[in-house]
Image (cartoon, rainbow, N blue to C red; front, side, top):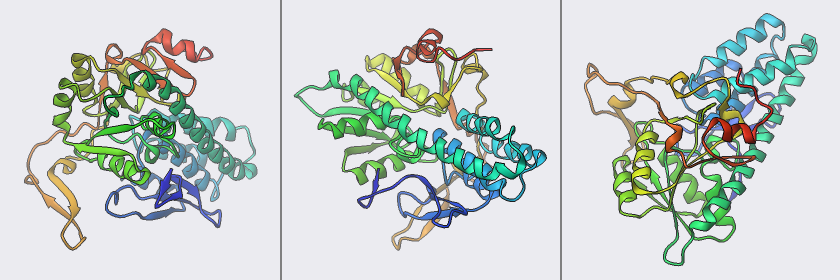
Length: 361
């Protein structure tokens, strides 16, 4: 996708080949800044602090983090230690563990002297594959959106959280069909849910503005009313983990939108690549849900009239809060899953039809 008219990925190797560079997403939408990560510790911190976020991008970033770690030491003990450290940064998004497992499978059989170079090349392959898969998700999703087009109004799509190119290496998951629809000449308008408390919807709005796509930001609590009024043709979200039975873990608030969509008769689609599907997880009840700091609720971040970043307290420090980062939407509420291989029912048999090589054991 583009930033200021320039084609950009969300992560890329530095010019000197000694680090990776990322878009610091904690500063968006107010400021666009590139950050340099030159160590595994720096990568882990960037993932924890959500300078990078989105399940596919977390996986790619962790792969690069492991590659950076092995430039210092590449013995077996250090390899396992760095994998464990990176895996502990975010528990819900399965792409993180998927990428690290893939790296281990490539690296473990190699002598330590060859591991650093092999790790860097494999991380780059994972990044490129993510781009190809997200582009394919866009094509698959476009086939679902075309029948919804009418001459009466633009195609009206609602999203939740940010599952655009900022959450992947490029193209995105939930936003990929929207980008594909616009590229195909379809008129599209996007309802962007703000997604508190981290306000990832502001990232979606920033993305769409950069691409010139019509959109409107809404409060999370407005979504049900818009769906009930018939102002939305489809709802598309991404996922942080899809269980073997089709249950979907995504940013907290997704379940409420799925319930509202079902009541309003609006299709609710989930777009995600293979790396988000956890065939070892039987159902949504087995998905770990990350509990984040209560300060994300107690504090509000923004810029003042002078453009200075500020943090304001909206609750006393002693206020008791709960801050689950994700929820689980039962498969029965999902109209279809969109992957790089096609569209399927949110069910064990539907996933098996797309990925027959997988084993639930």
